[in-house]
Amino acid sequence: MALKIYNTLTRQKELFKPIKPGQVTMYVCGPTVYDKAHVGHAMSALVFDIIRRYLEYKGYQVKHVSNYTDVDDKIIQKALVEGVEPLKIAEKYIREFDQHLKDLNVLTADAYPRATEEVDHIIESIAKLEEKSYAYAGEGDVYYRVNKFEGYGKLSGRKVEDMQAGSRIAVDSQKEHPMDFVLWKAAKPGEPFWESPWGKGRPGWHIECSVMCLNHLGERIDIHGGGNDLVFPHHENEIAQSEALTGKRFAKYWVHNGMMQLSGTKMSKSLGVLVTVDTFLAEHEPDVLRMMLLNSSYRGPLTFNEETTQHAQNALERLRSALRPARPQGDGVRDGGLQDQADTTYQKFIEAMDDDFNTAGALGHLFDLVRAINQARDQGVDAATLAVGQDLLRELTAVLGLTLEREEKGAGEVAPFVDLLLEIRSELRNQKLWALSDKIRDQLLELDVVLEDSPQGTTWRWK
RNA sequence: GGCGACGUGGCCAAGUGGUAAGGCAGAGGUCUGCAAAACCUUUAUCAUCGGUUCGAAUCCGAUCGUCGCCUCCA
Image (cartoon, rainbow, N blue to C red):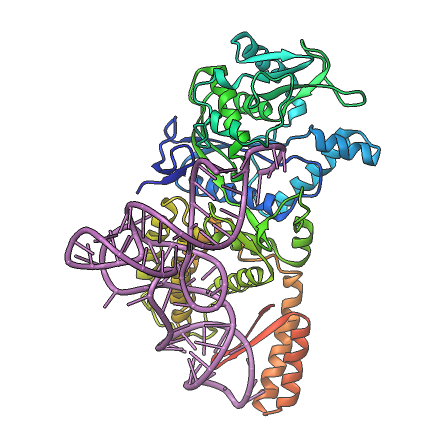
């Protein structure tokens, strides 16, 4: 079976063939750290986490790098307002984001480079671009000469002429052409700066990614990812820079995730329309967000609201229902067709995921397995038989990054006491003392312990 | 104005030529002392119009609508 990935560059699904067999290099654009992260940022991280997990599941060795933009206008502005060093601001939000990634069960990347740590390399690269006359300086700034790069616009499908027509681009007097973009920004008084051949200044936004990519992953990479709002100009400019520098095709597959929508528009920091990761995690478990993504296409927009969140929570519970143990004193019925269903599920899961990470389709197949497992349990199969389905479910949900089995708060210590209560309640029920036995059930529920009676006995679980 | 994505049941959503997966919600039922859970049954002709075809949600064209990018943005 072969994996296909939608490539923004060619606008079609392509057979995935990494540059080096068995190995994948993946660079994902991370956030500019000037404020708290919102669930849209988390979405991007989660999408590429799922992609990475699946690639690894398929046996690829993945080298994953994701950056932080830790110097730019907004960070400087925020620092000014708060009266602290810009780097402190960046540091604070990087730490927060790191913690979010951990909380969201995102696998740790091989490197998290920061712009400010690579300034030497950035300067070298700009100088090299200048040498090759892809760049020119003007009053302390350095610009990229867009018309010098032939393929400019190939990723976003625009033509330089068309964009000129749109009058939204402010014409900068230093620029030879309105579409030229800044590689190096001269420092204004009070701004952080680094010494360079063009004077004191700092890197422009686009160059850092080209340079960090080059440094950490090489001249050519397999997958370059980010939100689809980065296609233009950011990724277009990265291509222009990197390919001008190396003379080689930069990224083989450009992968972009859709935007998180809130009340009909893109969730965005600048618009102030957002739900922060903190807010979300205060009310929901991390898997809920992941579940929302899994139930839709990573490339399309994703509506975020109370309803879609609740749906995701409920769907998660449904997956978990399959992992409940076999009935106590099950009569040991064998099979129940679980093995067949497991085989089918596995095959269809792979098929769906191979089709440009069709997680919604893959989930659908997992739910078929869930039903089969629950059916088998109802039929009274023994634990070993049930495990055939459950083990596969655990394996495949793990590929998606879901952690179905939660750390139960002190379950070990509590269990004997709950079991004792169940024993007493069982005796009460035998004597038909319903009021008392219901009281035990109700009060345990208040402590988040759910009792479930069945003809074979009573089981309990955490709510 | 330019470029792009999309429009499937109450909601989310899969499905790219042969008469519509799955989840959530709803209804009915099985089980149960009751409840919960689970299980069973049940709810669509795919934005609109036209075309191609023996046959289209699936291909082509037009229309309407939604969203993104074109300025910082995951």
